[in-house]
Amino acid sequence: MSEPARKPLIGSKGLVVLVPYLWLFFFFLAPFLIVLKISLSTTAIAMPPYLPAFDLSEGIGAFFAALKELSLENYEFLFSDALYIKSYLSSLWIASLSTVLLLIIGYPIAYGMARSPKAWRPTLLMLVILPFWTSFLIRVYAWIGILSREGLLNTFLTWLGVIDTPLTILSTNIAVYIGIVYSYLPFMVLPLYAALEKMDDTLLEAASDLGCPPLKTFWVVTFPLSIPGVIAGCFLVFIPAVGEFVIPDLLGGSETLMIGKTLWAEFFSNRDWPLASSVAVVLLMILVIPIVFFQNMQQRQQERGA
View 1: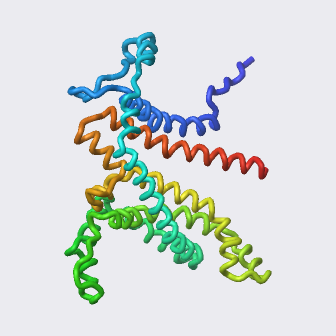
View 2 (view 1 turned 30 degrees about the vertical axis):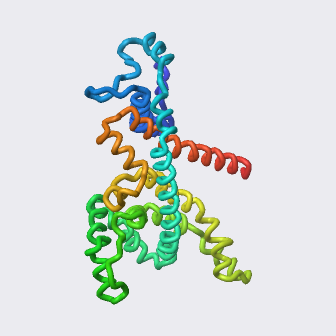
View 3 (view 1 turned 90 degrees about the vertical axis):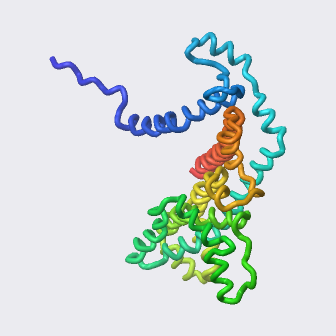
């Protein structure tokens, strides 16, 4: 008699689930643990510029012994220095306001794309993602030539007679908002378009037949159905905007305070890797913890609805 075929240890369904977990482990959890280890170390004039808090090569016993002597000095200094607190608060404010501006600008664009003829939609979608064909750094550099005192914007406004003296936009927070809105606009438009494009048009027709005016139909039918796209777009914009470094460094001034610039200065200027790692860990916690709570709340709501 032939032996029964052995079942694989991991089936196809298990493999599909395992792949994203492996991705998260190697590209998120492992780098995070490395940064966390550096944040618990002490600064030193060496290469690399820190003394490791523990060394796994010395064995498990030495590892647990070192855990008892770990110092949170970097985190204590982080929360006692007003510079870092202001950097976090300023980054959250700039990212939040930029997200609101992107939603106000991106929603009408996505709505117009979703309501356009189907033959035009691929072309409009291509126009939205067209900036991605150019380097992000080059696109941000281009705004320097547009927003400077002798740039295209001031030259054009002076030619029209709108202004007499050039406006000071570059090296201000306004330039940072412009750069963020321009750079992250596709990340807001695409989720909104995906949510609006698959919406059932018969719902709008039913609301119109029942005497609902267009504006009320939008707030009662269209906008509630597009909320998943709004949430996805806000997350895609807000999370990277909080830690943005290139835009505030190139377009912002010395008074533009964002945690990305502070993190860069600690790593490469001050060479204080443990403190910089502490800044990165706290920033990650600020972003991850609210998202986890939000996902749990959404899951509970879905379970109650079911």
